[in-house]
Image (cartoon, rainbow, N blue to C red; front, side, top):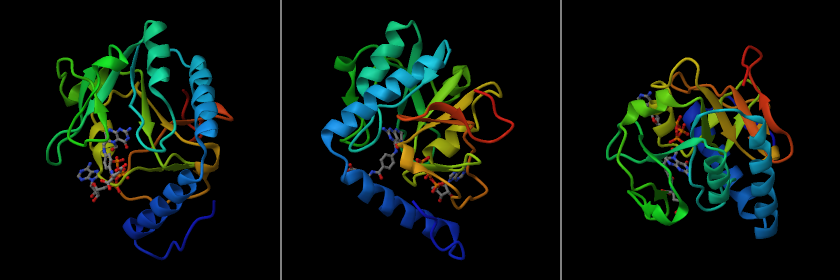
Length: 203
Ligand SMILES: Nc1nc2c(c(=O)[nH]1)N(C=O)[C@@H](CNc1ccc(C(=O)N[C@@H](CCC(=O)O)C(=O)O)cc1)CN2
Ligand SMILES: Nc1ncnc2c1ncn2[C@@H]1O[C@H](COP(=O)(O)OP(=O)(O)OP(=O)(O)O)[C@@H](O)[C@H]1O
């Protein structure tokens, strides 16, 4: 994928990128998606963590609910986001099993039903698997455009590693960055597993 016109304000360039990635994702077959999800799960084996903030993919997002179960079976505590009302940071609750997930604020987005741990629970995570549409080589992430993760990741501990989960083609040279954009330390892709983005970052 190629960068668009960098003279436009970042927000409108981001919107153009979202359209482009969504269109490319819509072309991916179910078989490809399943194969990629399995590869992402294998890629996670490289990470060691006792608590991981993860997400339940919707639509054409990379990943799977099975990935969450694999983490659980390894003894990892898995926290999932609960979308708040308004512009607050994400809330979190522990994942137990797929049957306990229910739609929350968005009908298409499954959420955990256990006790809410509050926005600061992200600080307990060793790793946050962050849903992304694209990420660039220095860790700038393109999300859905609601700013939920940017508002939440500032509450993480300085030991927490942010790992954007994307397809291989969604690692791009340069994304427009705004001051509030929280940088990713690493990316997880089906083809490459986990790899560091910014030079100083270690996963
Ligand atoms: N799987 C997943 N969970 C997540 C996120 C995410 O990006 N992916 N979020 C990341 O912040 C938060 C939820 N934020 C969201 C913000 C906007 C839209 C959104 O734009 N949805 C489309 C409709 C998509 C559809 O119908 O399939 C829309 O409203 O137009 C979705 C989630 C927390 N949980
Ligand atoms: N820390 C913050 N404080 C206040 N507003 C913020 C913060 N982070 C993001 N925002 C606001 O949220 C909006 C969306 O930001 P952005 O386009 O970077 O979202 P995103 O990272 O793509 O979305 P998401 O994290 O939900 O996937 C912007 O208008 C921005 O001003």
